[in-house]
Image 1 (cartoon, helix red, strand yellow):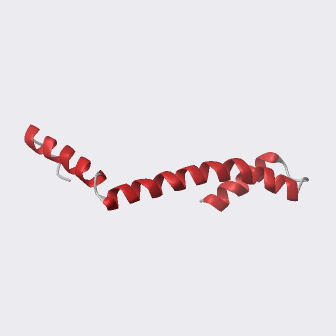
Image 2: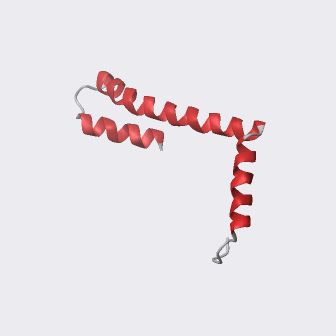
Image 3: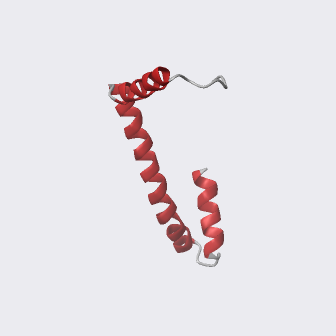
Length: 73
């Protein structure tokens, strides 16, 4: 993107383009996928340390959380 300032008309056109893109089937599908993976990541980040501690109770909780982060990223 260039460093020059956009005119008010160009800014309004950009906003309308974003609104239109979310109104398409592809835009809605992309939004659903992003939200689904966000929620899935939150749930796994909450559940996996507990599962790891259940399988290997001798490791500290901090280390279990570290391995979860390594798995998810």
